[in-house]
Image (tube, rainbow, N blue to C red; front, side, top):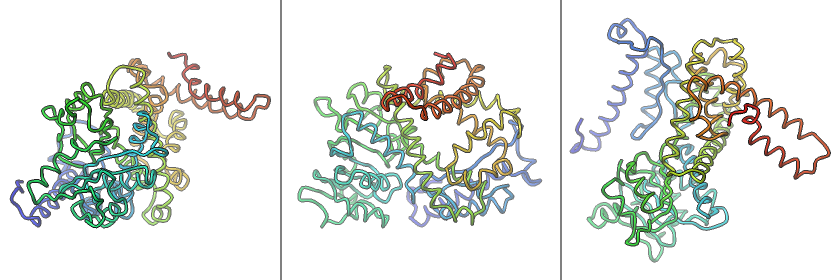
Length: 485
């Protein structure tokens, strides 16, 4: 549908209609009815577990309609068909789940570059307005965690750009965020003496907005909004000055595909830019969706609402923990082996997916109550947000589909090995060996945990000696016991 010359009302109607059409088309394929089954060509031969997540232009009204339509069409667990539900879910924008992960990668990148954001000032520029999910929440999180240490020198969105070499007023940026207003609504009374506010209503405003990410010199650039491939193979050099110095030595991709692969590689090779790729930096939104879908399967709506605050708190803590695991691994690999950060980000994804698939295939015959099933259940319960496991862990057998659990077991096992042992450890294993190794790894990890618990109670070792021994055992005990090097 071409909406180039359509009115705002027509565009809005087109988007809502498109969401409804897409949803019904998908339900036609996955909800078996006499009306639709005759038109479905099944090339897999088994049921797939499919659920939807939010993206740009999907509004709360869409999400509520999708859940209602899934129920109307006979989807088995309607509440588990869509995540980011405004009420009985974890809305991504309300809680800033994607931005929590972006902020962790930003922190780790700064520290790896010699800046401790908790102790030292730093500067940042952001594309994506204060009313945007990722950009607005990122500013909120940065101000929450670092206070006056963070100075936002520029913010650009579809309405214009605001710039201030002394840092834009945090209070005013948060006003725009809370009221869901674009940067063009920045109060001129809150601008510093050397600040500027440009609107897209003038040619100069368009030029300044479009060039902000290249012009302003900051410690970090976070593209958290903007058109795909804004920085591409033909213009990446505009991010460098005449001497070849980048306007920002760190880029953390909060938005998807703001940079092309060629732009990333050239900026790394020619400008030495540390770039945290989108697939790593902003994956916490997808992780949150998986937690929400589990909650929808395990709890009735009133039950979830009664503990929602605690579940959200647990989810946010887990997101920060998981983001830090990947950030630390990525920079560890980057320091120890040749290659750019995006290169290691992609290898992490490929290694996990490769191992995940091999383990999942090996678990295809696993049934509820099997020894393997029973041994892996604690792993799944530990994966769940603490409050959710506490409230409904005993319902997993009854309410979570077996195929879902097989997939979850495989993902947990693959991720556990990768983040502890590194990329090379998994890449070196043949696919037929990975499933057995994963189960052995999990068993040995539990043995090491028991040893650590006993060692912690031993008297006779000085505190520092005990800590060192326990650290060495924690870091290398499992791999040593497996004798896989």
